[in-house]
Length: 243
Image 1 (cartoon, rainbow, N blue to C red):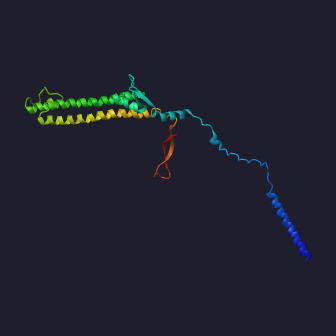
Image 2 (tube, rainbow, N blue to C red; image 1 turned 90 degrees about the horizontal axis):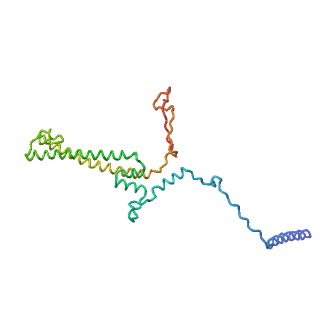
Image 3 (spheres, rainbow, N blue to C red; image 1 turned 90 degrees about the vertical axis):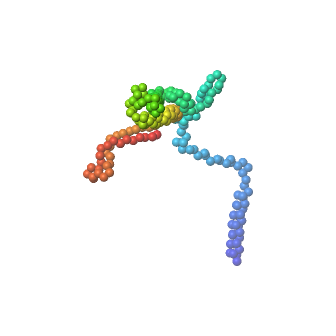
């Protein structure tokens, strides 16, 4: 009996000490708590913190991107502020007003012989077929009305060599058809020089000096269907690098 009482007393003493320790910890307050320490900021990788270096190539690329957005005045005179147009729009307007003016504005002087050569060629063709059509039509009308006969030396453009009225009529149809086609050619040449000035103004600041590189080297190339004894053949390999 005494052993049981002593065991219960020991167990009660142990339980009381445990409760007293927890109560003591729960009632301890720090009047000056330490400030909460913020975690250190996570720094980015060193490659992400490099300073941006603007190279001349990047400046040229930005200028090329912005060249189509810059506006300029046109037809400014006598107090009139003019029309605000972009560089490509101004080049196209100049080419519309005067053929070749857009190429001069873009400083592409070497294109002027091409522009005036094309326009001059189609205009000359129009004049040539118009003249022959007029001469054959005149000869046909004169022969049909009975005022003159075929093979009259007064006729021009080869009509004086035609021996029948049907031949004169065939000449009228032939030259009239080509005259009408050359009207289309004149409009096409006129429109192409406008488009050339517009596109050239867009690409005027486009830099291709270092971004495009063409390399070639001799190499043995595989030939499909060749025998295993000689599966390759000498050739040249071209590589175009776009940066």
